[in-house]
Amino acid sequence: MPFTNAQQETAADPRRRSAKGMIVSHERRAPFQLGCLWILLAALALFCSAVHAQDAAPADAARQSSAPANSQPAADQEPETIFSHSDANRWWLSGQINIITQGHGGFHALYSGPNSLKPSSEIANSRIFTLYTALRLTNASDIVFDLEEASGGGISNSLGVAGYPNIDVVRIPGEGTPLSTAPYVARAIFRYVFSLTDKAEDAEVGPLGMLKSLPARRLEFRVGKMSLADFFDVNPVGSDSHFQFMNWTAVNNGAWDFAADTRGYTYAGMLEYDYHTWAIRFAEALMPTVANGIALDGDLARARSENLEIEFHPHVISDKPAQVRLLSYVNHANMGDYREAIDLFLQGKTPAPDIVATREQGRIKYGFGVNLEQQVWGSLRAFGRFGWNSGTHESFAYTEVDQTFELGADYAGGTWHRPYDKAGLAIVTNGISGDHREYLKLGGLGFLLGDGDLTYGRENIVEGYYNAHLWRGVYAALDLQHINNPGYNQNRGPVLVPAVRLHIEF
Image 1 (spheres, rainbow, N blue to C red):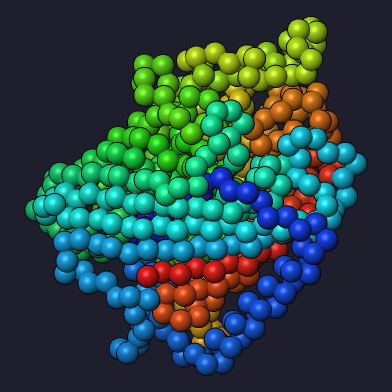
Image 2 (image 1 turned 180 degrees about the horizontal axis):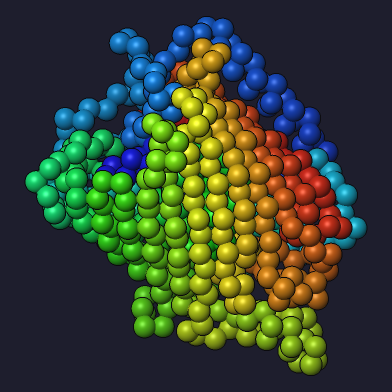
C-alpha cells in the first residue's frame, strides 16, 4: 500500500465498523463463560510459548513487521499468513476473520435510561470477515475492491458508553431500516499516482495497494467507497483494531466525527502529496442523511465533509522514528442543536429535550486533532492523541465525544523470545461540551447515550491487551478495559470489560 511509512503498518487491517447483529446475552452465566474463555486463551498462549519459543513469523502481509526494529526474521520463517502471497502478481487476494467475545459483570448504577449500559452482567460475540482484492492496472494506478460480512453484536446493543469497548460493533441505527447481515461492499477505490520526480522508492504490495514502487515526490488521487480512518489519524501503535486495542476512542480520535455511514464507510475523493519527511492529504466525503444513518447524502451543496491532515516526521530522539499528524475537519449536514433542544424543552414545547426536532440542513460542526507516535527503543513505542470539536451541534457520525486525550504504548515480545507477540496499554479520557451534558442531564437522548439523568464526570478508560502469535496467520488476544463514569455519569459504574479475540489471516 502506498501510504507513508507510518501508515503501512496498519494497511492490511484497515479499521472498520461491522454490521448490526443481535446481542447474545446470558445474564447469570456471563462471568463464568467469559472466565472460561480467558483461561482457554491463556492456555493457548502458554502452549504456543512453550512449543514455539523461537517463533519468528511476521505479523501481517501488508503491515510493516511488529517486531523490534533491529530484529530480522529467520531464513526459515513461517509464511506471513496461512497462505503465502506473491508480490510478483498484478492482483491480490486475501482475507481476515476477527472474532471477539466480550462481556462485563454487574456494576453499580443508581438509575438507567433507554440508552444506558446495562448494569446486570452480559456477554456478547461479534464476528467480521473481510475479503480483500486488488489489481495493478498500470505502473501508476490500481484498484481495490473489498467485500465484508459481519454478524453478532455488542454488549447493551452498543449503547451507553462514548468510548465503546468493541470497535467491530456499530451503533444500532435509531432511524430508518435496520442493517442487513448480508455481505456488503466495504471498499471500491481507484488510485492514480502522479510522479513529480524521477527518483523512485520501493513500496510493499498488499490488499490496499499493488504498486511496487512510488515516486519519492508524488501526488496521489483516490476516489470511491472508503473509510476515511484508513488514511487519516493513522497511528502504528494505536490504530490496528485487529492486532492492538479494541476501544473506539483508543483506536480513533473520539472527537473526530468523521464522515461515514453506520458501518464506517463513505464515498470520497482524496488528494495526497508526499515528499520525504512530510505529507499533506485532503478528502471531500459524503455525510449520512441522518445521525448514525446508513444512507449517504449525495448533494455536496447541502451536506459534505472536508478533512485535512498534515504529517511530519521530526527527529526528536536521534535515530528513533517519530510521527506528528495535525488534523482538521468541517462537517456540513442536517444536524440538530443542543441548546435549541434544551430551550424548546424548558419552554414546554417538547416533553423532553429532542435533538431531532431541531435539525436544520447546512449546519456546521468542526474540530481538530493531534496524533503523535515515537519509537522509544527497539521494542517500545509510545503514542498520544488529542481531539476537540465545537460540541454545539449534535454528534452525527462516529461517537458522542467533544474532547479527548489519549496516551499509550506497546511493547514487542522479543525480551521473552516472542518477537511477534505484543502487549499494549492506553489511557483515554473523554469529555463533552456544556450544552451536550445539559441536554443529557435533562433526559435527552443521543444516538449512543441517554441515562435519563446525568451527574457529569469525564469518561475515563484504561485498556490493556496481550496479542499472541499462535501459528502462521493465527493470533489470539486477551483484552481488559476499565471504564469509569460510563456515558459521563458519576452515578453509574465503574465497569470492568474483559474480552478475548481470535484473528486469522489467510
